[in-house]
Length: 119
Image (cartoon, helix red, strand yellow):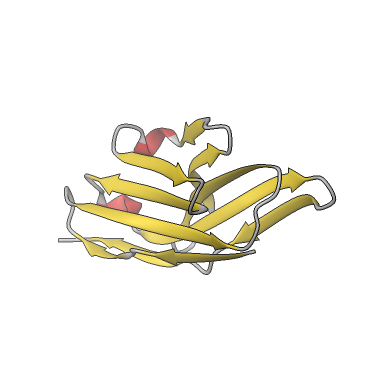
């Protein structure tokens, strides 16, 4: 499975930006798609995930500002970033992890897309 991200770039504080991640290939079994971010000098950390059954999880710092959604027919996950702050500046990585019969555990990462929040 290959994860292809798009939508990063420069955005002003208080603006909006939408990230997309398409999974190319067959996704098996129970899984979750999500977004993680990594700022310079920091570890990669969770932003939001959405499970194949619909359960959604956000890190506290983005609750009320970011919205994750998923189109299972397109194997695509989105991150709508509203009212971003300069501290949201990071490389954003798409992730797909899960388990499938005959496949076992799997964990895929996208190449990352830069998001810069600045006026």
